[in-house]
Length: 600
Image (cartoon, one colour):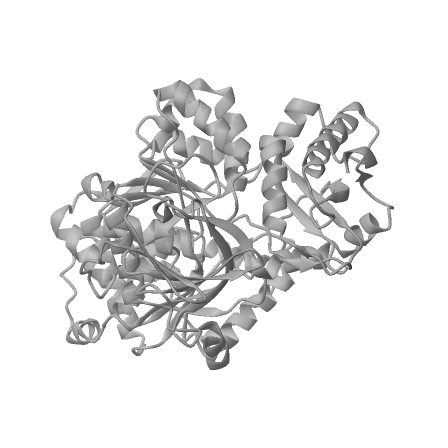
């Protein structure tokens, strides 16, 4: 890890915060990394996935380079042009990775969409909206995605890139082939530069409508150089990942995938998910791979922890060669942090190697990271080399805006949104709130305080900051609670909708179905949550922090309902729309449970 040395410039109305180390040179084009490792480590596995027989199939760097060249030539033969867009609708797979690299290598921008959007009419409408913005000329879709489609694909006049043809060009189907070096292919590649669009990534829509974020080759390459300068061990030992994070989102597609590629690592594609039905697959995969780098969202860790606690063998394999344990996408509860830390200490005698970062789709995934020991959840570290954060006081914390080589130039086809996204000094306005862990020692980094879009006023005119209230509740509830949604805009008081970890609830409270029931497990769960909220309320100084009524979500948020993003985080505006009746019933005292007045 690099030493955390930072620079702070205090101006009249704001603070400029940066890292002292300058950003070192990096390639302009993403394909450069694949070309490097195809020469330097040709037989090393780059991507791996489960075969139909259940065994791992590994694609080496040299085979990946040949396959990418073949698919790139196919795209050229389809009369594609520099600047066209290719829509990819596929689960994470080797073919998906190859096609995306091939397209980017000949100046075709990739637009990746989760296949789950094809399974519902609402999702198909989302695909239509994305296609209206991106106007893709070509489509690559996996057979599984097409079979699950709830209706015709609203893709306009996009030309299909045959899945079977792509597979036939791969190592298993092609045999010996000449190196593809057609004049057109080489001309297209020589025209690439740092400002060429590599991807158009649509935001998850957690707090608003999704927008098409331009990702240039320079952004993607800069971000990986920035990370490697702070997490230096990735250059000394190529990382091995076992990762499910979807490539249609920036964390999986730009961080996990590109970090593997930049550092000559191996990415085992985890076909599990952070769900009750998918976590068993994840555990099997992790136990076999024994990753050196593991990333998950807090919802995934909440399912992982109780299973690790049950199996000493699984825990030993999980930690056996782990260099870094990363979380992102949402706040990690102190209970989860402590639980996994305890397992690490008992297994290998050292703390869990936790790290965290913060960023957005507009910053190619990451803007700040912790590259030094941290003592608890919530810390997001210091700016990456080459980045400057502008911090402006607002509502008791700092509004953060950022500038650097990994920041998007704007939104595809939306000049108005692009203009609104930047301030008069060229800083990208993130909409997020942060604070210093220690104002006297900025090198201890920043703490994430939430999104301003999630803040709201009660009827009294008092501002509510949900992130600090959620952190208080999660720290008291431990791994039982996966997330808390606070409601009360223009209302008389706060109410809480609680998403629980069902496995922990069954194990510790013999809970079933919902806390509305009169069985002992439901009553015990209610009483525990009343105690948790009561302890929180006892430390509150005003009504803007106190919770008066609460309920447990009997039906948890799901991807199919649109309430969850592919990352497993709650899409707040969709959640509120879907749960409007439930929320209104809480305020009307027709649902849930009240918190004893004595606790307030």
